[in-house]
Length: 239
Length: 234
Image 1 (cartoon, rainbow over the protein chains, first blue to last red):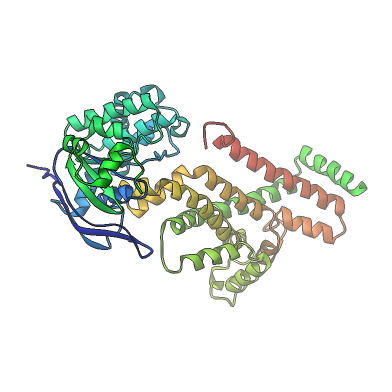
Image 2 (image 1 turned 60 degrees about the horizontal axis):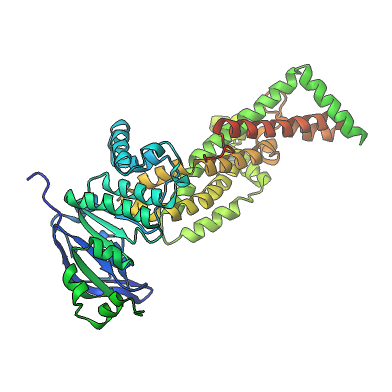
């Protein structure tokens, strides 16, 4: 095999601290090579920080993250979609092409591939528009195309549909499901329990900076093991 | 009031008759300041960007110093450059004193902190916006700076134009290191100072109006070339 898989990722006792406060951890988990994981939990529980930790964007105060390849290589095969899509001050096409261009793909090839991706996410008509004039749903689809263009092995998404309406969410989920069907490992945080039920293969329930409960989706929604998870699924307020 | 009117009339006359002295010193003004702006931008824009992207122990101190240097008194810069370039100074062998090159050197020293500081302000905001994306995409520091410079080019143009504004109207430094020598280092501002000293107010005013017009023209020209004020663009 030319390209050994970067997964599974093994996390051992990883802790993220900021200003002396523990935000997440210690967390130990393993990210399997396939599947679609939904990360749930109340606001401020540490979902975003956990995703950023796995993606390598947080300094690990203690513990380790072990990919199957050296970290520098692993970083190249991951992508991240943020809650608020970051639109570069460029055309939609150039936004999608940017990850390829910055890592050395010739501009012409990069733009051609970006064009096919724009077509795939239904933004072909907006290719020459400035990314910053796109609507919320279009921006997030653009961000997803930009994340997928390097064909990542694992894709992290941090509440990507938090600000989208029903239709935009459905379109977003369709692209995401297609990517997952194509073999991309997905780890996604969401607040939307309906979305979690639609997409989840398995669930991580994050509570007060720790991984409170992990379970396959059907089991998690049918019979959560912890009181907090049960309350959360019921729509009670969990603090 | 009479002087102002006469000044305007004389300015018109000088322009219409394409007065050769006027054209010569106007072109020299432009040449000196534009060269200085280009060099100062080449140093200041990446420097401002680097300061926005890089975190290091003395960063705050460096930025505060840079901001303070924006108010560098041109006369003092001129004096120091004079001492360095004078025959007995360390760079005296190059024979640069009282040449346009010396004037460009002095203006580069005055303009670089200004351009770097404005660039830093602009890029800092853009960097806050792009930070997560560029970190996530695993870019090198050089790639980040290049991306920010490119995407922030409209704001950076403003930084360069601010530099041009300060340079074209500057008289203290270029008077000292240039010497206001006719046909060699006389520019619009030094000519104005000279004519005012001679009591030749109408001519001084005429040159003043031409200087203002030149500054406005360059700004408008740059803006229309880069289409800054067109919507949908930066």
